[in-house]
Image (cartoon, rainbow, N blue to C red; front, top):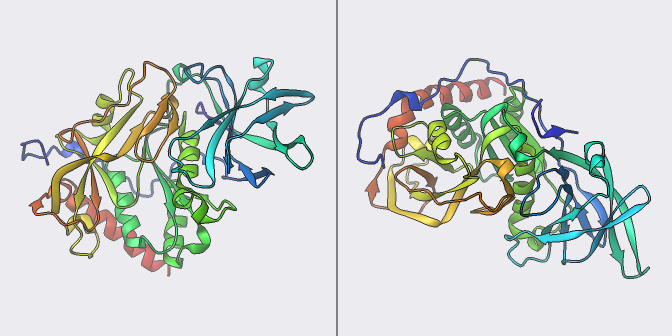
Length: 392
């Protein structure tokens, strides 16, 4: 059982075939999925989710219980365990973008650290201005995070967090291309946050099939909050939960969308690149972005579109992290690591880059993805599409 217990080619035209990993037939992953993402109403219209025991002792203080909370303001919270009350420390996540509803983490130190090992629920108190007293609600503990130095082995080497999938933004064909290209690079699991009722039948059928294979974990995501009142459909909530659910499960975790592909720009594989870049005290890396122009919408789009802007974007980066070393993960950067000596550098585009396929123009040509993965991606893509059509 894993530690998070559950309740441009750099001037070289040659291609190293070891970059590409073979996908075995009928591969079923025997690694359990995490808990559902549930929201608990805690008063004043606030919501709590994904409460966790955090035994890490770093720059965020002592081992304690932490409760992510969605609230309209930063305020005082209390925690209660049986008959004992504790003051909560409230920390605001940095990528709330001044929206009405924001994500906070409430931390409560227990009087007896031994209780961290056995606690299953905790009560969180919110001050009610009408009654002039704290009102408490029971919140279940979802994750248990040990000291990061105690995590030695991971069931999975690399997983992908996909914070939002809703509506018809991505077709089933685009999703197949994304998953199969990443599987060729060693991704073992995809954590996909979905609003199931908004997806079309074909996409739901595809994701359910991948889920039965253990490749995709579907997390239904629907907080009872007006979407215009929180940043980008609540993306920071799903980023936070996915970070927590992958601690101890996966060595490397990326956060990206279905039109973004991490591609090494040397002759190393993606996994080898991550082993090199995320070593020692490096807890996270920021990867610059190349924008690929979509002129031909025939799937797979990575095999039909090659115009790009060679000037890499180093502001809207995407991240790959060692999750146990991170306290707060944002959308474009790691906001806080758990120890002061951990670092989060931006890597060179000559080592690793995000290839982001969107209509942005561009006059240069880049065939790297097609050169690396074209033949094998084509075969795997076609197989999955044919199986999807058979299921109709």
